[in-house]
Length: 243
Image (cartoon, rainbow, N blue to C red; front, side, top):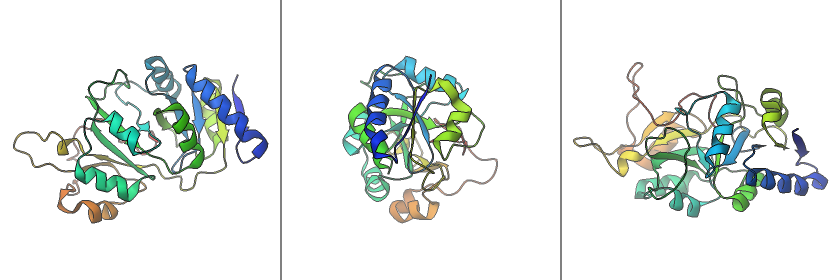
C-alpha cells in the first residue's frame, strides 16, 4: 500500500522524508519531485531495487536509469575520472538539468543494467531531492511514468501510472519546468576510440540547450547529427522515459 505525503505541508514533510529514507533502505521505490520532472527512485547499489524500478516502469535492462547525486563529491566517487571539460559543465549547469555520461568507477559493485561500463549522473536543483540524496546516497532515478507514457509533472499523475509499485510518493506540486534533462555523452574525453577526436555528444536534447553547451565546450561539442545518422548510446534517448 502506497503512502502519499504533501511536502508543501510542514506537518507532513518530516514524516514524508523519514518514510522515504526507510523505503529506500528496504529496497523499495520512492517518487520524488525534481527540477525537471518527477522521478521514481531506488537505491543505486541494490540490484533488486533497480530491477524493481525497471519492472515498475515496464522497461528492460537495456535502458538503465541515470543516477542522481547530492553534489560533486558523489560524482567523483561514481566515475573513473572527471575530465576538465566535464568539470566546466558541472560548474556551469549543476545543480540543474544536465545529465552527464562517463565511464563508471570500475571498483563499484552495482548493477544498473546494460550500461556498457558507463553511468549517467545528474545533480538536481530541488531541495527535497537534494536533502533525500544527502541522507541516502546516490539514487537510481528515472522519470516517474510507465515506459512510453509522458513523464509525470505532479505526483498524482505518477501514482495513477505506477500505483502500489511505489512505496512512498512525495508530492510538492507541479515540476518547475516539466522538461527532462539534457543528456550528454562525455566518455570519449576519458577513452577516445583510436583515430577519433575526443568530443562531447548530445544524446538527448532537454533543459540545457545546444547553444548553452557550446558556450562552455566550444569545439569539443560534437556537431549536430543529421537525421538517420544517430549512433548507439549507452542510455535511453527517449524524451519521455528518462528523468
